[in-house]
Image 1 (cartoon, rainbow, N blue to C red):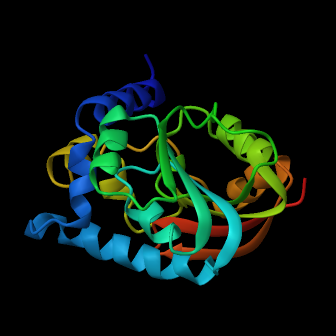
Image 2 (cartoon, rainbow, N blue to C red):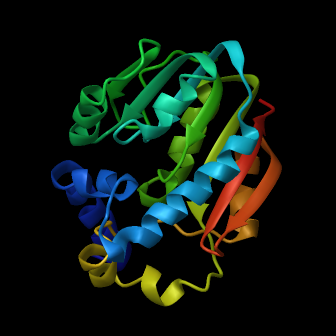
Length: 220
């Protein structure tokens, strides 16, 4: 088994057995995990620039985790579908008193339980990091998205000042309680991946030199 396969396997094991550790980053008081919390808050500040109220729209929160983002999206859109392949995360999301216009479903984001051309907005924050097949998921996003739908995606970037920490699975697991990364993209690789799926980049933000936050239009 190669290094990439090892990371995919470790990531899969994490999401199915220890996913609640990741959810805790939103509320942690652990000093070692404070940077995670600050980072997530700053990420949301950037993402919110691309959110505008749309009372007739359907939004997809792909890789919804324990539902923090879906709860926010519910105040902007008519309905929100949160999808995560970790049953642990879906159970946590459902326990967190979701708004009435939010529905959670357990599913692989490469095989979404949604009809074609049914979604106005797609949000995938912290999902593309861990996918075994990034292109398959982007193609699935394109399938369910309406023409001219908007997407907000995040993915680890390279080059990054955090490279030494990024590739140590031991540091990520023991200090930050997060799984190993699977995907890291340069700006050029990111552009190629989105262009293949008929997605036009409207804005790219580099957050802390470690993450791309991308606002995308689906041109079909």
